[in-house]
Structure formats: structure tokens, C-alpha cells
Image (tube, rainbow, N blue to C red):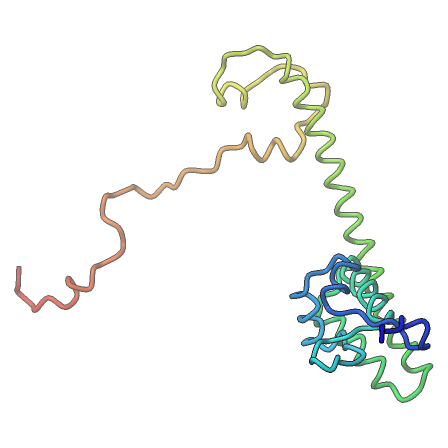
Length: 193
């Protein structure tokens, strides 16, 4: 007797963990972690004890990816699920979810602004360095710090100014002895040489 396909028996198709991993681009280890965190559950187990997942698991893994991209940690994802399923009323659950998403939207917009500022700094730094490409000097790095060549901008970009400013040297005199005192020196009896 040949086995009948799942479609012929009106049973949903089940995926083993390796198949789910391949379909979603996740590792088996990641899927196990999601289960441990309470983010994912197998639909059932085979007679041999293998985890079997349904199509909802694929959707859940897409959801995890979306939240991860939005900056959610696995613990935060777990909290989102717990808040949703612990709410007694639908409107209460929706209000909690809306609050979480609004907070993430603010964080995302702030991150976008920081990245846009970084983009401007990188563009300015590259424009400044473009003039250095055709310089042809044989100066040391100290000579580059004191360069009077026109780089096409009024001030040095911050990314270069930070490199070109030398850290202040400590005014404390250097000695060959460190502040560390070996234990044998501490335990030496008084008067012993």
C-alpha cells in the first residue's frame, strides 16, 4: 500500500524541522531557540517523535524576522506575544500592540536620523579625501595633519578631524615600575631583604 499525499487525505501538510529551516532560511538551532523562548510551537509530533510544523510556523518565522528587523529582541517578541494573549479583551490587546509599535516607530525614526547623519559624514569625508588621492606628497602622517591643501570645504569633516587630532600625552612622568606590587613583596616578613 502506497502512502497517500496529505492533500488527498485533507490533512494539512506538515514540515519537519529541517524542511522548515530550509524553507525559511533559518537554522535548526534558531528554530529550537524560538521554541525555548515560546515564540514557536510545533503543530504536532510524528510517531517517531519528530517535530512537525504547519504553514502557520512559516508565517510565524516571517513575523519574527520582521520584528527582528524592526529592532525587537527575542525577549521583546516574547513580551509582545504574552501581552497579546494575556489581554482579556481584543481592544485592550490592540491598544497594547499599538503602544509597542508606536514606541518602535519613534526608535526607528531616531535610528534613521542617526544613519542619515552618518551618511553625510561619510560623504563629506570621502569628498575631503578625494583631494588627497592626487596629492603626491611624500610627507609623513604628521605632514598630512598640517596639510594646507584646499580640499574644497571650509572645515574638515568630523570623521577626519578625529583622526588627525593627536590624543593628549599624559603629563605624568613614565617610570619602569608599574603600580602593581607582587604578592611576594606584600607577604615578605618585615626586615627581610
